[in-house]
Each structure stands twice: as C-alpha cells, then as structure tokens.
Image 1 (tube, rainbow, N blue to C red):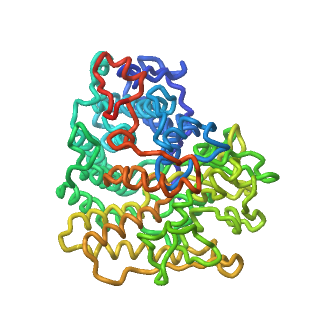
Image 2: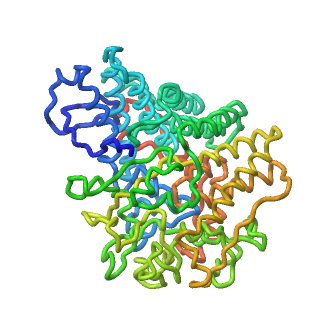
Image 3: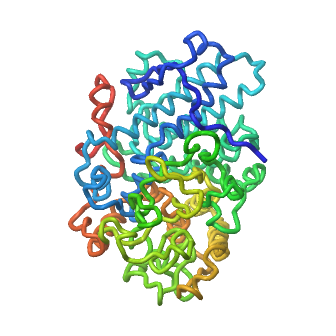
Length: 577
C-alpha cells in the first residue's frame, strides 16, 4: 500500500518569508532551525514537507481552500446558516451587494494563499543550492512548482489581476516592487502553465506517497490552466470573453490524452459516490488524481482531520447537536437534475417547476449530491430527512436540502468533534471526471470534426451515473423516487453539444465549487446569475431585486490592505471598488 505524505505541520521552522507588502510575509513560530541550517541544502526535505503541510495547517473553515464559501455566488448553492447576518460577508458575495475591499474574507484568502506560495518558494530557493548529486532534486523542484502553480491558479480565479511570485530569489525590496498588472491576463495564465509544464516533464508517473502530485496530476492541472487561458479576457476595461483561442484548446486536448492518465492508473470509478467516502478502501481511488490527504487516529489529538467542511454539517438534534448548516443546495440546482421521458436534461424548462420526488424523474446523481427530505441522511435510514429545524437553521429561508459530498454519516467513527466537526475524508482537488469534461469542452469548442468524441465522453459519464446506485439501489422501492438517465444518441452540432457539455459539468461537479468559476470563464455569469436571482427570489427572498454587475462581480476586489501597502504598485480591479 502506498503511504501518505505526512501533511500535519510537525515542523516548527524559524522562517520569516520575505514578502511583497506582507502579502508573502509569513511569521512562523520560533523553533528548532537556525538561519545557518536554513541555508544548508541537507535541510531541504524539511522545507518541502512544510510547503505541503501549509495546505492543511493554513486551511480555514470560514474561507476554505476548497472554495465552497466562494461558490455561494453561483446558482448551485445558498450560503445557509441561520440567516443573512450569519457569515454576512459571504451573504454580500451571494447577492452581489455590499462587498467591501475591507471585508475580512476578501483579504484572508489572499494572505493565506500567498503564504502557501511563500513556503514553496522558500523550498525552491534552497533546492537550487542543493548539489545535483541529490537524485530527487528535479522531482522535488517539480513538486514545489506544482504547489506554487496551484496557489497562483486559485488566486487568479478569485482576483484575476495578481502579482506573480515566480522568482524564488527575489529580495524583499524586489518583492515590494511587484505589480499586479505586470502581465496581461493571458501572460498570467501562461506563467501558471509554465510551472505545471515543468512539473509534467519532471514528475514520475507514480509516487510512493500519494499526497505528492504525479505526472497525471501535472497534466490535468496543465489542461485546466490552458482551458481557462483559452477564454481570453483581453479588454482591460472588461471581464468579458473577447475570443476563444484554438491553440490553447489544442493543448487541453494534448494533456488529457487517455495514455497520460492510464500511465498513472487513472480511470473512472464505477460509482461516483465512492469519490466522497471517508473509508480507507475508497480514498485515493483511481478517479482521484490529486487530493489533500487527511487522517485520524494517527497519534495527534484529533488526527489530521479535514476541518474545512465543519460549517456544512447540519444541526441534527440528538445526533450531531451542533453543525452550522452552511452551503445548502439551491432549489435551482435540484431542479436541474430533472429529466425528460428519455432521461435527458430539461435544458430550457428544468426550472419551470420545483422538482417533485413523487412524480418527477431525476438523474440519479441528485441523490448522491443533495440530501432530500424523505430520504436517509448520508444513506443512514435511522436518520430520515424532513422539513424541520434539524435540516434548516434558518427556519426554511435557505430551504431544507443539505450537501452530501462534503459530509459523512454522523453515527460513524468518521465524524470527529473538535472545535468544529471534522472528518478524515480526503478532499479531491483533481478528479478524472473533470479531466474528461475538460477534454470534451475543448473538442466541442475546436469544432474540428471531433464533436462525436466529445459526446461519447458525456455519455460515458451519464452511463456511469446510472451505475452509481450502490447507496441508493432501494430508493425507488422504499422512498418513491423515480430515477432515469439517458444517453445522447443523435448527431449534434456545436451549439447543441456545448449546451450538453455545460449541463453535464453542472450535474457531475455540483457542489464541488466549480460552477461560479465556469460561468465567469464562459462569460455567462451575468446572464445566468441575473436569471437565477429573478427565478429564485420567490423561493429564497434574499435574492429579491438583486443584480449581478458585469465587469465587477466576476472577480473579488484587490484587498484594501494590499492596495494601501503597495506603494502604488497595485491597480484595483475594474468595477468601481
């Protein structure tokens, strides 16, 4: 069995990372390593572990690296909690109103992600001094560049115009003179791609420790970067898509080839739900390309648990007696799983009525994504969901649905109570279904005669959806639900195939924090979200009279603290912040 790379931050390093206006400045506790030791190449492995560990130790339930808190801007989810004042800064994001550059959630994610990048750069600076006789030198450099690329990727999706810390040897003064508009939008994506390309060329097909990225992970992230890069936003006065670049799309196709994934034993699981289970026999399965590694019973107080989803647990009296009930699936998302008589999506009419479990047919993935009243919570028949306070701290304002992908059976040993609820369930950052969808999207957008291949990819995921019944095989007989999912059997033009692709991404990746970023990438955020506000206002009154502001709400503003400390080197994002 492969071992996990140890991600608990057991190293206490006396390191002060040099940083641009403190955005890279990370004060770690004074510990066991002197400045002299930090400059000694033999200590490089400790810095490498520290660069991995920060992705766990710097995680925060209030603004998670998983980005669930920031996905409340999409049509997939309500913020939840007990009302708009509970997590009010995320309520502001949810309704695109009252967002302030001084809000803590604008600044917090910026600071923590650059701290993660700082750890990788510190390790890279020492790796450069390491003798070439160190046989893992190039591989470890590739790992650190992968982590640095991951940090920059998350930042760019959130803020768009960011400073790039891609030189690990900059002085403090040089860091302080970095500009967040030194590169065009396209050039910024290319800098991120360069890190992943180096990783792709220097990582092994398999790693002995599963927390370390391998060649397939680098390929997947490289493809994802080029997919975002393809949708050009070249107008400095706008966030709208100006063109779609064919050369970038071709790179997406190149890096999603089956052979690359097969070399690292990546494939589609038979049941989608197995990606979201905490048991050891399911984690790091063949669909998981790269995941944050969590555990418990490993000698630490509460284990190396995933606390990132602690706010998503519902408050079930007599079972959890705690849990904050955030990130609740929207009625719009539930309705999107409705299907017609052939088991195909109701593209234009899915939201014309609320899904009725007793009469409507639904894609089976609904019951693996959303906890529905009248069915068992986390597939445990002793905990039946209903429309009561157990399932809505807000008294129904945010509805009674709950997320299933983030939670575990509360009666099992896998739900751990600390300051918040946690579990040892890994968080998958890159999974193969997403890679398949990236490839299908690129093929459709290229429109070079391979749309049939793209449709076959969509059908593979839809066929897998029908097989994903391990936990719900009795739902039709015991709970009266109606399940169906059909395949696309005709010839389709580009517009039809693209509509199918976009719906498939929503259904397959629902509640995995991809939806809002997809809408921005496609240039559809205002159209989709304004329609969502209008239609959802009767179901959730927080959306009444709200409007998504194009060329503003697609990205977060540059935090006020960073602007103030930048000595004029930062330019605020457009939108009148």
